[in-house]
Image 1 (cartoon, helix red, strand yellow):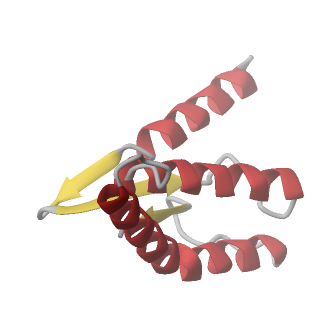
Image 2 (spheres, one colour; image 1 turned 30 degrees about the vertical axis):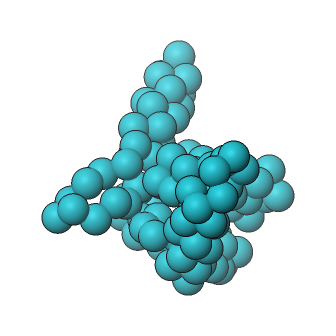
Length: 111
């Protein structure tokens, strides 16, 4: 029972952490992976999905009908994924060597 409660709290924290934050006018989103096992393919896939979801919330969909908006969303998406790539690699590397990447075990996505 206590394990399930702790797991539910971790999942809730991960979902809340993925909500965009507007600090100093810059858009960003914090994506937690504290509840994921990044040494497994399932954990890596869930982490990638969380990052993709955060990027889409920040940048919008690249499949928009209006060309200018679709191009801007694509540029934003590319910039956001490039900015978070080093943090993702570090998280995967630390999971492979069983080291903790950070206390909060999250990455920040920003265009």
